[in-house]
Length: 187
Image 1 (cartoon, rainbow, N blue to C red):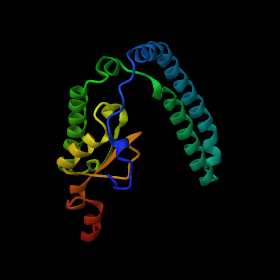
Image 2: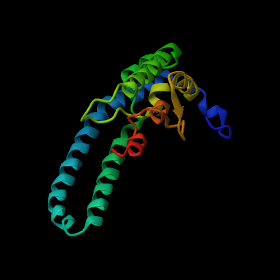
Image 3: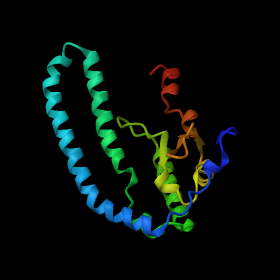
Image 4: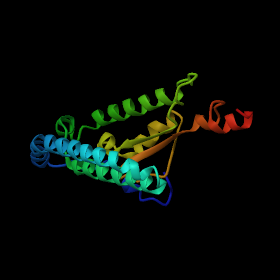
């Protein structure tokens, strides 16, 4: 955590009213299937347009990058429409700090297990960066995520704690399997 950041941003989120969560949960049950269908329809249309745009992309590399960025922004924007949705666990465990502590411990533990796994030949490198979404830590705050992650060997990256906590596996910089170490060995 940077010292210049507002420490209240790293505190747990206030408990939301039960009636508001219940109303959002019911709206989620009605809205989420429509959102998924809309996302799939837009993805299909973009795919079909992309097949025809492939002919243009063969001539212009800038067009291909622009189209891929447009697709990413469009599909990501549709996915963000569901950010207000409330899941069943959120409805049941709102205000339960023990639940959120266990959830953070599990999520950070899973990322630690993946990052500390030995590299297998001819396979992708283990992840060295991760993002823990606010949905996973809203009941305990970003400070708890940082404490758990630091205890397991992670470093904090520049983060907007109102959205996510970004982490970097610090052991990766000391590992002989990093790209920097590969470059030093000349491989």
